[in-house]
Image 1 (cartoon, protein in one colour):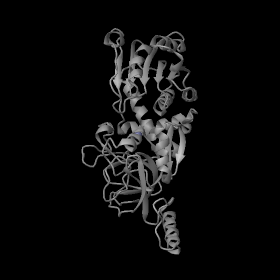
Image 2 (cartoon, helix red, strand yellow):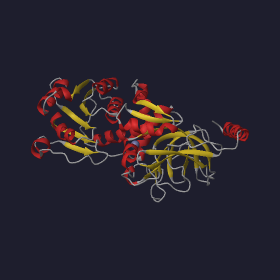
Image 3 (cartoon, helix red, strand yellow):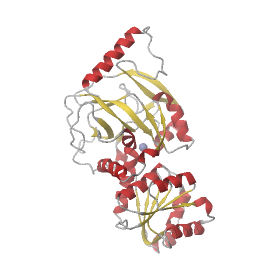
Image 4 (cartoon, protein in one colour):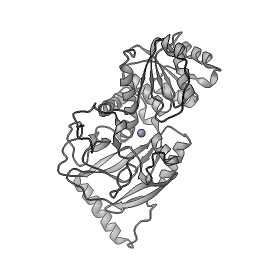
Length: 398
Ligand SMILES: [Zn+2]
């Protein structure tokens, strides 16, 4: 949308509002009134309220983005359920994307140096307002873990702080990327995909992950499935997927896994490791990615890896409890090299844009990862669906 059509939209809305009875839309309205934005405010655990706020004036460094869609993350589900981060009241949603409708005069380029204009499609990443040391030229400097992110900010007088809304106010000092060359579904998947681009970059530091490696991916939720996709775009062909759900394993094969192993069909870790070995034609894995949050799964995965092999543990985004391993058999005598991975750097974000194009280019069905789409006013239902573990990626689409 260019500035003219944005103006026209506003004029039409103003006229329509004038024709009405003067009563503002109730909080469950499916469209915002002129000059206002609906937000999904989490006001108490397991309850979002659709509230409407005036769109604030922009400073010379701000950008106003009309939200097109936002993925629901496991982090959102945790916060929705119990408020573990003590953010309530809060507008959640950090896997969002939309179109620039207005920007301050100082804004010229995105965080990677690409020009920005009204009508461009964008995503945000971290906010470094209080850390002037980090600039667009230091994309590698910091893992997002220590920074603020839109969608996990406490509420303030502007309110437009998360992507579960009609508009988001991107303030000066935030990282923003022009991703106009990606379709909406791809843009919604950028954030979770960056997690896997980062994990594979971490795995590569071991020197064990190579072109012809045998790789086992344990856990075929969105993270494991995207892991398989990233490996495929790197040219790794020999992938065995391990999960307990046959539907997910079938999708893992669509995503490029060569073979799958359903752990429910095997009694005990020896039998399961034997099945993985058989799936690789009589070999253990050179490298393993652990993509579940289950301590038992962590304990098991060492048995799938050959002597001198490598492991990337990325399943424990939050504390899932202690896991038991035998240091002698699992690590020392086998000389396993392990790396941990958590979130991503800004550099990984930029790499992810290319990954998504390559994944499409080699025909991986990335768009099938988004199994449910809900409008903003059905956000409570969306989060409940996520908590029921139905489907894969759930998205709010405006
Ligand atoms: Zn997320």
